Length: 546
Ligand code: ARG
Image 1 (cartoon, protein in one colour):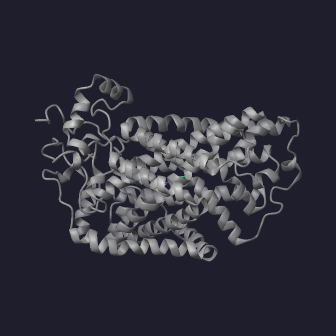
Image 2: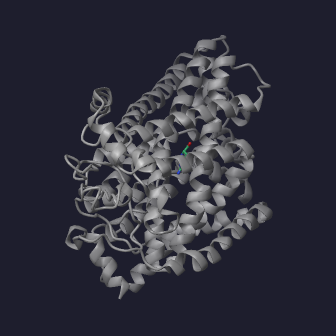
Image 3: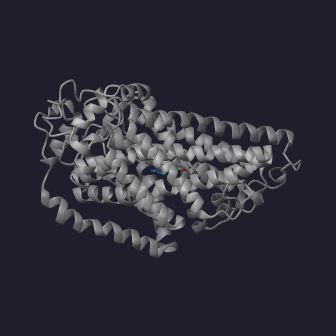
């Protein structure tokens, strides 16, 4: 038998997500591969491993990516003044925070993996949960990964060729971006630990970088130093609110640009089921991460204004690189380009991680073929025989496994197929993707589902006032979030009617898929020896199914 010495009690996925709580419950018990019909049904939540710090590094690592280093000019240009821009950074941050706080309440009340999918399915109808998955797996996740990898490519190429090079062939950027994507996909395939270690390291680097930018900015402002001897006087001469535009559509565009930099705040909710103590730690993670990120972003923007003249802050798409070159010359611009590249790489890495768990969860729901929910590379080739041989036979691979931290499970004990699917979709978007189209689509579709989910919180308060909510946010929080997202969405409809129509058409296309394919197959089977007392969320789910 291949199952000897091989058990699923091992810590397969410290951060994994399985079912979003549709029909298949979470937390299948310890079982051997043979009992389980291969690795296919491996369920991972029995071992709740996520701590407060893990959650923090996941969410901060995902949020701080490209935005703070490249989108400030869009905010500045559309607000017309530094003061106005700083207000937008605070407003966007607080908006993201209200969204995240609302999600924290939902995550505490319904402690299951899967994020919006679970909440929408339970509070409205399963079809809404499916539609979220449909859009998230096919567009939102790979689309945002494509955006980040293209930006990463831009910065790395710029660092290599030189900051001055204006006309860089976009295919160079795409090629470098794709290499980064393959690399993070590979890391995440090898082991969960490897992926999260890369993430922790890069998060640390990002904090240092943003702190460095801030300190540099303040020092430059005091000493008047600059590399080429031309101090920036704009911030002394102009009023901070001089020239502020009074135009709601410009504000909306600025807000969108700011929100991109804060995006990713919902990602801890995909893995709520993995927290050791979700009701305590999820709100704690969110209430530390969000103010921390807001503070970093506001300070970094302040530093940009102190160092760079307004003409530059309003127009540059690579503001951080410009900042570096103004203070330290060519070395500085090279250094900052590399930092931004690395920051995007980190965000891509965390995003790959959560996306793969979402695909994995979707497969457990029966929303995508079960093939994509499989765990381990061996399972695909020759059932689990291969995997156990990877684990036991090769000294090299077990040494490597010890190094990357997953010695219990061996290498490649990850949702490889889900990772590959996500990677392929992302490649598609990178290759054909029009950058601006992607960004608009992402904004409109993303905020539609954020809005619906937070609306669901309000509905749940009315429908089930007695439901136990370990964390309860002020009722104003979801109301503010809903109002601002409605404002943003309505502006998008006016400004980009065609794009909005595209989003609506795409979401609508999911409806027949759900009723013809998914619904027909009926509910997924529960694992044979599943113990429902292990899973607190299950009881709630059962009550709701009645
Ligand atoms: N905030 C990130 C950035 O500035 C983008 C996050 C993309 N969102 C996501 N869910 N992957 O680059």
